[in-house]
Image 1 (cartoon, rainbow, N blue to C red):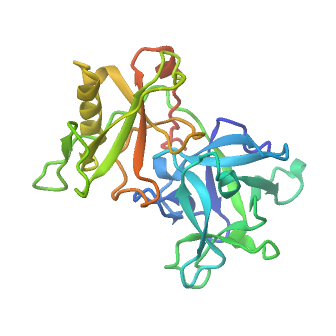
Image 2: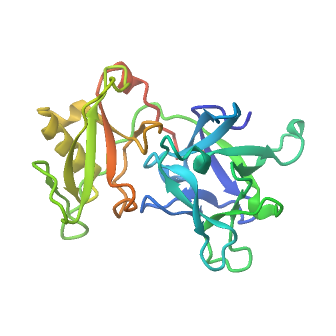
Length: 294
């Protein structure tokens, strides 16, 4: 557990795939290996949680969308071994899908920072594509099959001194175009449902917090912030910060990149956003990994 301090951010690079990084796809669902280290999608925040049996497990929360490294019920695609690994939510009934135990490869005192990540089920996290290098997906393999493809080098990520700026809205003639409708939810109309709630000044959610929702078309986090501010009656959108929360027990993750390029899986109907006032203690407590650090 010493390589995974609670609340810290880490990179995980695959020993079997030449140091490629564990990477959350920008669709908000897939997980693969990628050479893109300088991306929030390759950064993971450590979240310690205790099982019903009293054991502490490591949960890995993506720094981009706040979604958790999850073993699904589905088999991995052809050419990959074991079960499919995805980005998922952390709710009351799915602890056993998101819980991992790191096992160090080599002795603790020899400076080795490689681990095997063993899932609650006993499966181990592995990269794929040793021979077919175009297979970049990540899967959970049976527990008696550990190879360099299931070895991960852990590196700590320092924090940024200041929050990153939000990406600008793209020109509709050179990319996608966002539209927002904060008046109502329109059944059957494409888009995603944004559920949002205002946090207390310390960043926590009050008991029985009242959630509201609207339909949002597009991906721009800049425009989403403007839509949420309007829905809250805030005159200045710069006065709020948005955090994604992927599930009841999930960490609140500062949302500083554009939204996933597709809606979340059908069994997750909403994208939950926690709104924190800029300048509040809750906003000051938010942490941003410096993915550009060397």
